[in-house]
View (cartoon, helix red, strand yellow):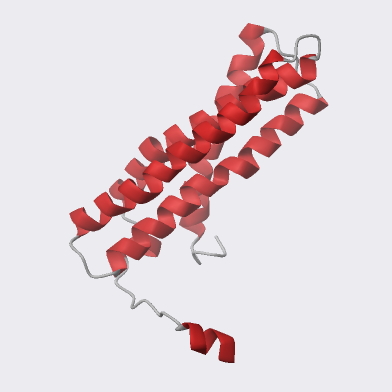
Length: 160
């Protein structure tokens, strides 16, 4: 909310995170993972890691739309860059933590590996589908406003 100066931005970015937590907790019961402090901490970690996808996609959409290109072309460019990177990063994180599933005898490691891998995949998928659909449907001003982009040159940044 602070970065985008919009309360709506904060609530929209929460959508994929809430979906991720619901899926994680919804999967824990049927497969027998207990709800305890370590598994709650895993959900908190997953939310912290997963928030980046929606923030990055929002910034790329805003950046592309404010660059002066046609809306369809700007959104396509944003999805080709931020969308692809969200998929790459989420699968890399999921794969990295997923290795912990093979820690036979160390249930907490197995649970953590599974839950964080699942959370990363759910969060990136819900960001690229549900979150993006909400952005395109609601057309919030923090992305679609035609404010001029202020670009500081490197020399100006150093001078400051």
